[in-house]
Length: 93
Image (tube, rainbow, N blue to C red; front, side, top):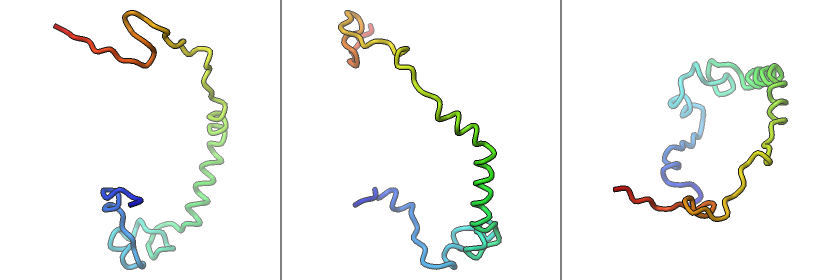
């Protein structure tokens, strides 16, 4: 199977407009699917306008990078902590 059974149970394959109206209220469906909501074209225009409004924010996100020089060095062999990436079992009385 390509999809896990639990995820497959959550999926619904709809054959026509009448079955989609059974699953979703008519007010939420776009006009393109026989609903009373905003058309897909108008929704796309709204999304592009919103993106353009916050374009500087997305440009700033591209500038963020990790400064690897600030990352602590890996432990070689520490008597208390062990080697880097290993976990020691602690016994508490």
